Amino acid sequence: MLNLVLFGPPGAGKGTQAEFLVKTFDLKHVSTGDLLRAEIAAATELGIEAKKFMDAGNLVPDSVVIGMIASLFKANPDTKGFIFDGFPRTVAQAEALDQLLNSNNAPISGMLSLEVADEELIGRLLNRGKTSGRSDDADSSIIENRIKNYHIQTSPLKEYYGLQNKLTEVDGMGSIEEIAERLKLGVETL
Ligand code: B4P
Image 1 (spheres, protein in one colour):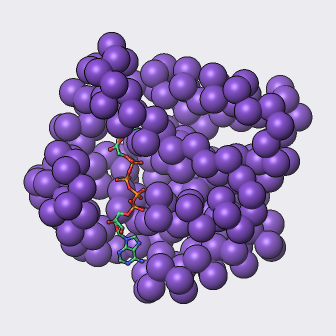
Image 2 (cartoon, helix red, strand yellow):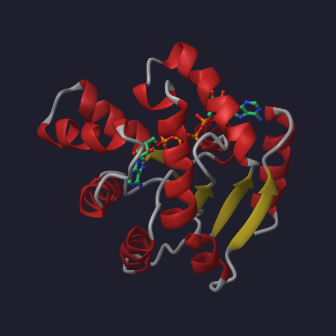
């Protein structure tokens, strides 16, 4: 199985590039952001709880997202591999993912980390906020809080996967096509 973690700060282009990688390598796309937004749209108990965290630019509790990933993994036994987009976002999530995948003899193949400057991230997200209807993209102080939380809670994962020799850093500045080509090369050299 080819199991990829597509990593980067909010607005780095994870969702954008995941679409391309899914087609190129025939993988199952798992976006915790999309899963949570679907729960919100369906007004489930989980969605109502998650919305409070997301609207403030904070991470949803680990137990919620870990549970979602475990059910999705079980529901897709025949896939060639997964692309995890926006997951894991904390060390506890990464440990839970390793436990799940290793116990199924399907470990993470590699982490591709999109490197983008903070000022560029803010511009991209404010721009998306004009049309996305996402409340977490509409306000620059919420976006700054998301980026701050990324640096504190999520960026340590680069070291986590680096210690397993699974980290590939990819320049995330430039056109969508240029970045897609860099990611493809990154996957081919895993
Ligand atoms: P996510 O849905 O994961 O989204 P994201 O971080 O905002 O964006 P992404 O990096 O996917 O950006 P995109 O490609 O769309 O998270 C939302 C929230 O959900 C989190 O804040 C958190 O509250 C919660 N959550 C999700 N997962 C969680 C977890 N595991 N644990 C806890 N909480 C969790 O790109 C952004 C914009 O840039 C787009 O408009 C795109 O068109 C544009 N763009 C992309 N590439 C570009 C390029 N090269 N040049 C110019 N623009 C570009």
